[in-house]
Image 1 (cartoon, helix red, strand yellow):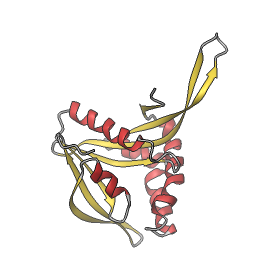
Image 2 (cartoon, rainbow, N blue to C red):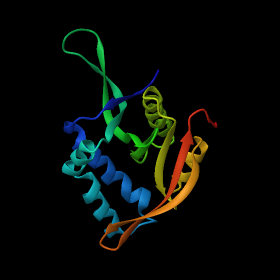
Image 3 (cartoon, rainbow, N blue to C red):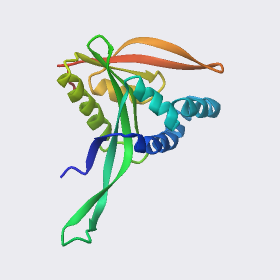
Image 4 (cartoon, one colour):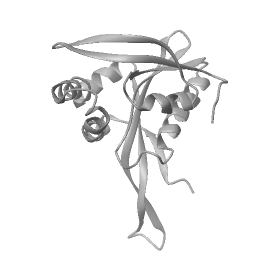
Length: 185
C-alpha cells in the first residue's frame, strides 16, 4: 500500500514549503555553503511572497504528503488516513524548448531513502511527457551528494553554470538533463 500522496500546492501551502526548506537546507548545504549564504537564499526563495512570485512566473509546486497513521472518524466506523507534508518539488514547462526544468526538490531529513525523491521526479516526468516535453533539466550544486542520485535516475551532466545571486554569493551548479526514454535502475 502506498503511504504517501503528491498533491498540487496552493498558496495555503507556501508556509509548509518554507518550513521544509528551513529544516532541509542546513543539513543539505551546511558543509557546502556558509550559514550566511543559506539564510540569504532561504529568504530570497522561500518567503511565501517569493514562492508566489515564482508561481506567477510559471513554476508549479507539488507537496509530497506522508501518511501519519489512521484516525477514527466521528462519523462512523471507517478510519481516516492522515498525512503530513515532508517534501516538495517545483517545475516549469518549456523552461527551454521542449524541456521541463525542475527548479526545486527537497525532502525532510529522516524521510530520504524511502523512494520519495524518485517519486517526485517521476511525478514531474509524467506531467512533462503528457505536455509533449522531451527532457527534464535541473541545476544542482556541484558539491551536493544528490548529483549521484540524479545520475542514478538517468540524468547526465551537460555543463557547469555559476549564478551571481547578490551580496557576493554564487550558486555553483551542474546543469543536468534527462532525455525521455533513458532509464537506469
